[in-house]
Length: 290
Image 1: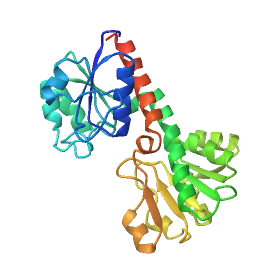
Image 2: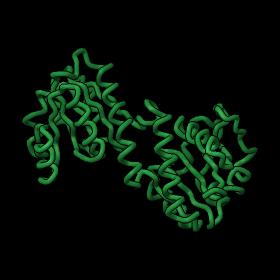
Image 3: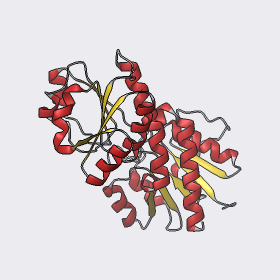
């Protein structure tokens, strides 16, 4: 992949760090969507979107790719960048890589005959991305609760990648870790790791004891019934992607504090998150023989 050329389009601090890293690796790189940002390597932004894309083999978008299914997620850019304009400029020989690409945008790419890859569907990326997510969630909890996590009762909803890493970290801090899961196989693993297992149907029996609840399930789980059982001083940290797993309106009505902590890797550890992105992108390119 020595002669591969890259373009980084929009995104948060992760993509700024990523562009710098690719530049340090001596690859040709263009950027666009960052007219309010600075780059360590002195990369200059392309004059327009077409120039940024035309000379590249791999177009790297942000995580998430879009917040509205119409425009690129580009918080460091003053103007809107429309997804259909990106795909219209791209050729079928180029690859579009971004994170959390919606079905609508995937279908749009297919209409323009563009090969798109959701980097968060790569197992190595998803697992590594869970590390800064878990650390960020713990950082939030430490800043928000008036007690130590040591000896506190914490409930993790879901035993996926983030749930597994988060449970391990919290156990290491001395927290009393409860983990909810639906599958019997997950409940068996939870027990084997020394955590307290909570079946989905038993959540209501335990939730009133919890100091902190970490949700990783991206659909409504903490509904009005479960929220009503919480202590008023309990903290909920929702790590799930949209639409989240909490009835936010009901939580506000009854005075339960909820923090919806989206995109934590880019906020708490952008350099590490960028390194994970770069390594995964290089893996993709090697596999595709670009």
